[in-house]
Length: 535
Image 1: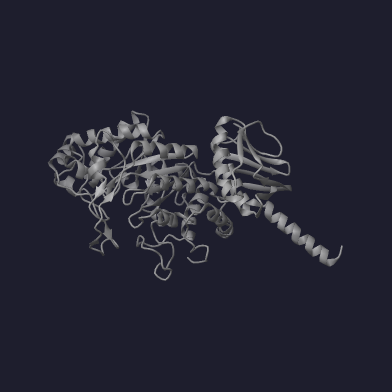
Image 2: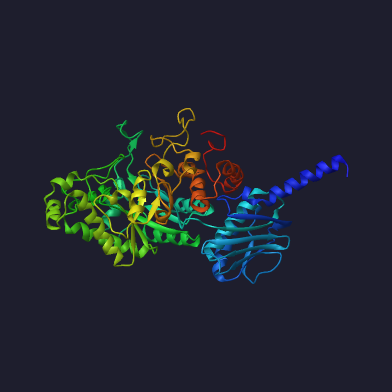
């Protein structure tokens, strides 16, 4: 062989080897990836053959997404596996979120422990296809065997639709982005000081009064006293909520509603002033921050209202968890409220911290009796919590560590790593970033560096059920801006949740530059700082 031919052969082999090493492509990083021999031509004529009817849904969603790559949708049918097709199969011997993706020269097989696992395998195949060149509706994918499964059972993202409201289609698009990254929990923040966003039929005035504020702050909170002149608000009807929940379920994603209590309740208090300690009058907030006006813990009418609200919430959301907030609830009103002080005395409580624990545990018992469990922000630790409460640690990881040591389940969501309403670069002004939260930035590297197990021994680590990234929307009024804050940082959280113990930032960065091609094909709006090497 001539020297020139040898060089050409070496280059060809290198390209083939790279193409087959799809650990260099997929985000989050697969557990194992073994190159095979040959390649398969995936085209618009390829049929997706689903072993059973339940897998047809996953195949159709994949076909829709792949059409952005190939230009046309693939045909999806309930058919037995066959060569020359994309075959979707269930194998109950596999873990619930484990899939095997086998690309051969004669076809593609995706086998999962559940329909959800097969769906995740399809997300990996979608990324593989998007990474390759497409010619006339055909993409050639190299033979490979991938064995992959999740590390954490809970991988979530929260979307605040209270400070600013978004359309049903926007929320669905948000869910699409999560699904691509194998996120399996959608935390929907629905009630706030600045707006009540869920229809409750027993309390129709919430949709008329609590859902609207007179105007909205312009500029940074605490620095600006300028407001626009626009009445702002809206509410998701129960039919719309059902539509979103069904849409998420089709993408194998659980929806967790958040109904805030006892704080962040001004919208509800404006509607029904008797639920507060002072009796009002109250006004739906038009700026951001923490209000001293919270639900009165001494009045039985407060618990009657919340139980009635939750009764309707339970009918809309089938997943077992309900988030009941518990954060940023100043005790000022409780300290001087006769009803709250009487409650403290009657229940033998030591102080207002224990009064909050009484409040949360009472709601938890009511939910437990109906087969549901609670999640609360880490402030619910103050005054003591039940063993069955799940703590979402947001003020750093300290609360999560404390909860795990107590034996409570924990979701790590520290603001220092997981709050993507924060700036994305170390110099926001120089990088011309839009107005965002002014605390220290959460860069892509910062988000990726989260270690949910830090500070815990092996036993305590077992109480860490997962991770979550949160998008608060004080300064985010459009969905394009929401996407811009979500992407690409959600990918960093996704890799921690799925691939913990198998992470490498430089490798992740290389894969993200390939995944960016799919972002473009899907028409997602994303921040380019990371891709341009800006941190």
